Each structure stands twice: as structure tokens, then as C-alpha cells.
Image (tube, rainbow, N blue to C red; front, top):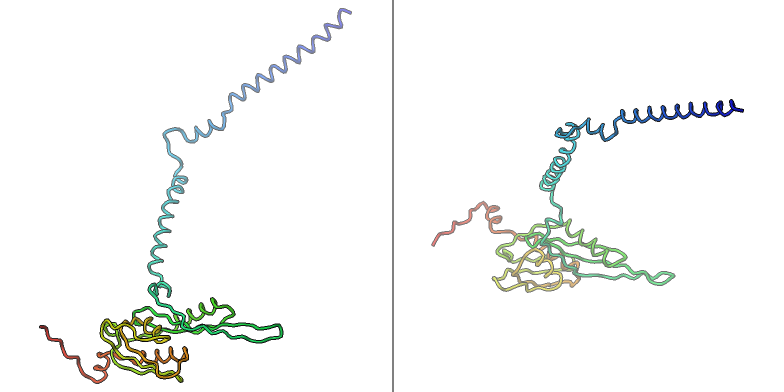
Length: 246
């Protein structure tokens, strides 16, 4: 009976000694292996800068943004101006809107047409005609068409250089120059055209049809016939007399 407890105690002591030795070895190994922070500190010690590649990437980002901004500014300056930018002080007026009704089995279908006059008030004027199912859409179409088909007009001191008569179909329009301060003595489509062209003093009279389209086209025909004094003298082979100083 005395030998049995001795045999049971001996293996327990051996196991505890082995476990203790294993734990001591693990702790020693953990002390020897450096942590991640320590590795990073060794890789980039205090007082030293980051690698050149990382620094160059960080410095290149603001430089790149500056270059992109400069390139955009240059492109914006050299880009051709759009028609909207060219016509910042543009004049645009709806002369006439017509409604057309088509009778169908279910009722009536309405469509609209618009006549629009536009110009830059500096000698350019044009008109446009547009059709659509809605009023706003037909006005938009007419406006775009009027800006595409502009003609140059000769203006002399805010008025026209000479008397002229324009005709188109049944429309016939008379335009006469006026002294400063007279204003636009015109109405309807004639007034819209001369105002869009930049004329401030003129006497006008419609002598034919009162159809808005014909009146506008006759007015444009009259303005296209205008010639300045320099052009007439050059066609005749003469020179303008020099102005004498007082």
C-alpha cells in the first residue's frame, strides 16, 4: 500500500516541470520577436524622411491639380465662343404666333407656329419661323433659326444712310433716315426688325400686305439694299472729300 501513492506522485511532478519549461520558452521567444510598431520604427527611424517614391507621389498631386487648372483656363480662353456668348446683348422678339386646328375623329388637334426676330443691336439681324405642338417649343425653334440666318446691315449714326423700299410677296415697306432724337416711327414687324438691327432713329411705312411674315421679309429686303457712302464712292471710282479742320 505504501508503494502505490509514490508511483502516482512521480508522473504529476514530471508533467508540471515540462509545462513550466514550455511556458518559459514561449515567453522568451515572445520577448525576442519585435512587435509591428517596433519594426516600423526601425524601418523609418525618427529624424529620417519617408522614401523618395512616397514623397514624390504626395508632392505630385498638388502640382498635377495646378497644371490641370492652368490647362483648363488656356482651353477656355482659346475655345471658340458660342453663339450665346456672342449675343450677350441680343434682342429677341416674338412678332406673331399662329394657331392651327386640325379636326379629327376624336376632336381637334392644335399646332402652333411662331415668327421670331433676333439681332445683336450692332448691325446684325435675322428672322426665324418654327412649328410645334406646343407654344414654347415653336418659339424655341424659331429663335434658333433666326440666330442661324443673320444678315449684316449698314448703319450710319444710329440711322440708315438713305431712303429705301423693300418688297417681298405682297409686302412693301418704305424706310427713311431720321434726325437724332426722332426714335423708331414704326410698328409691328418693321419695328421689331429695325430695333434688333440697332437702328434708333428711322421713319417707316408699310405700303402693302399686313401679313407679319411678308412685312418682316420686306423690311429685311430693304435693309439689305442699304449701302454706305464709302461703298458707293468706291463703286464709282471716286474718293471721299477730306474733311477740313476748322
